[in-house]
Length: 208
Image 1 (cartoon, rainbow, N blue to C red):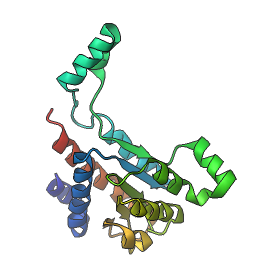
Image 2: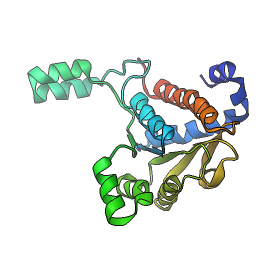
Image 3: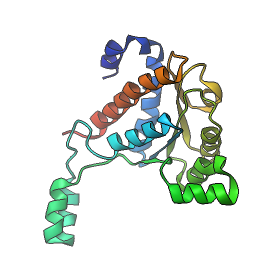
Image 4: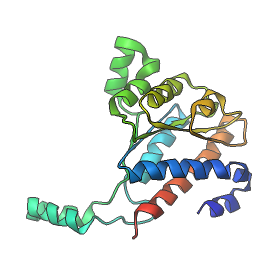
């Protein structure tokens, strides 16, 4: 899957190893029962939500529930359980920290809006989790505060960025720094990268 990505986007050859390193961190996280927390601003906030959409439901696979879960659902409620057993899909736990308006606005009003993502990492995150910061410059301060908080909690930190990687690349356990300088060009390369990561994870954890 990674080789196919590079074939379609040869410009990403220079970050192939970084993508593989990020995948291995995510694989270990999910093997350990962890979750992924994601944050960014503007288009990167939209990318955060997009990633959650690919991880939390079927991407290219149906991801049927285990027979044990199907049985538990039907025993709990024969009518609704049957429909749930048929329609629910397996999910890889992921939370975008970008769309919690009540919490973010309250924290901004009461404390400091720049620390809103950090507050969520502090509340949600545990040591087996991963934080993914998306910043085209690598210097978004609210993402950096979240990354520092994640590291302090023993979490792994991933960076998806561009230009020279900025501050985020320096703190990240794996940083994917796409070889572009302009924001929109960086964002155009971020999408196929995180699609590939989601596909690789789905291939690893789901058979059908």
